[in-house]
Every structure is written in C-alpha cells, then in structure tokens.
Image (cartoon, rainbow, N blue to C red):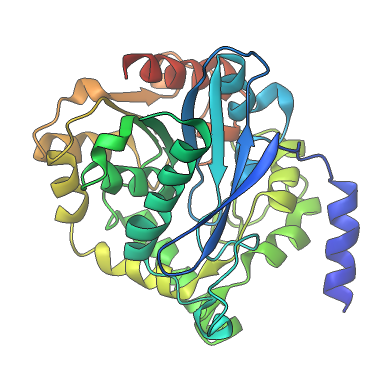
Length: 338
C-alpha cells in the first residue's frame, strides 16, 4: 500500500508525457491486443507511415518525454505519420481472454517477432492505406525490426533504422545485466518478471541526486539531463518478463542469430551506435556487420571521438541532452535513403 501511494505521488509530480493524436488497437494472431499510439502530422498532404519501436523495458514515453527533445515530434514535423507500438507484456497491452493469468508473463521473443511485429505493420498499413512502412527501432525494437526485415514480410518495409541495436547478445556487459535481471525476477516474482515499472518509479526522484549503481538503474545518468532521467523512470519503464530475459540470454550463445538476419537484408538499413553504450558499442556492431558481409558504411558511431558533444550510452541515443541536434538528424537522413 505504501509503495502504491508513493508511486501515485511520484507520477503526479513528474507528470508530463505528451499525449498522441489517437490510440489504435491491433490484435496479434494468438489473441494479444496491442495499442498503437499515433502521432499524425497536421498537414493534409500524404504522410509516410513510420513505426517507432521501443526497446526492452521501455515504452512510448522514451520517444516523447519532452516536446523539445522528442524524436516522435521531430519525425512528425518532417511529415511522417508516426506509430509507437507496445509489445506484449507492457502494461497497456491485453493478453488473450482465455488463460490471461497464465499467459500474461509468458512472453517469448519469437512471438514478438512473428505475431506482434506483423500485426503492428498490418495495422499501420490498414490505418494509412500505404503499401510500405518504415521501421525505426531502439534496442530490442531494432532487433525485432531486423528480424522482420529478414523474413517473409520484408516487402512491407521501406527501410530500417536501428538505434543501439545489440547485435551481439553475448556481449559481456549485456550478458551480466541479463544474468542480474533473471536473478531479480526469481527473487521477486518466482521468475515471472522483474517488477521494473514499480522499482523505476520509486527511484525516479533520486535519479541525478544520488549515486545509484548502474545495474540498479534503468537509465544511467551520463548524457541525459537529470530532470529527463527522472521523468523517464516515472513514465517510460515497463516490467521485464522473465521468459523474454531467458530467451535473450540463450541467444547470447548464438551469435549467428543476428548475423543470419543481417545477411538476408535487401532494404536500406542504417545502424546508429553510441560510444558509451555497453550493450551495443560501435566495435561490436561493426564486427557483426563485417561477418554478415555488410558494409561498415551502414554504421554511424556517435560520441566525442567522432566530433559529437554528446556522451552516448544506451538510452542517451534517444533521450540524451544532445540527441536532438546530433542523433535525430542522422535518423532523418537515414529515412530519406529509403
């Protein structure tokens, strides 16, 4: 009861996540209902539809915490019809009516790719009447887009922009983080999930004010303004399903999972990697591209070594202080190629 009361107070004090133009719903083949938050341009001219896919443990708020630092708003201003989905397991989603309690946290990566992503693309195409949709994904949202682009529905995509895509799930920093997360899931919910949404809300007021170990913080402060870090913890975090964490951990032993998808790509793709990103550093991303036979010219590294002012860790790529001036233009440029 005390924790819930604190969450409510924190949510009110850190309120401010802007609202989308409308919320549409799509249904995956296995019955999951998923919301699509739409940010439509005001112009009457035809707009290019675009999916903006959040990463592991994130939601739409990560792309739209502040109008002055919102990737969603930047894209809309450039004439894109933006749709931000929630993947199964997020609080806003609804499991199939039958066996809802049993399936709520039975979240598998293959279903997110084969069922959720396809339903999202079909929903966007139906809502807009377009024949293709662009996909901009962050973290896990980028990996899902990559697998979709390498599969039978590739023709429905006009291009892919992958921001902070952890192509090597066996990277030491990511493997350590997954191991810790799985242990927390077992300790707190018997393995069902990491109750990250509540934990992040409770620690939100402390972010930028106290030193919190990186493993215990959803967003590490470097590169992100303290006020935005606090709002991101209060509004932009979802629980982590234990089954999904275990899927990702197992794929860490199979480097060919991402590389085989990379080798099948036949559409314009751009990877954006942050120098301080321990999960998807430029060197690991470049290595995966080389092994798959792709050109390293498809990779853009951002950070001080490349003349940028921003210090880009994983989430700073989309919410960092300098991201609107340094990362968002790279996204726009990549989309113009598709």
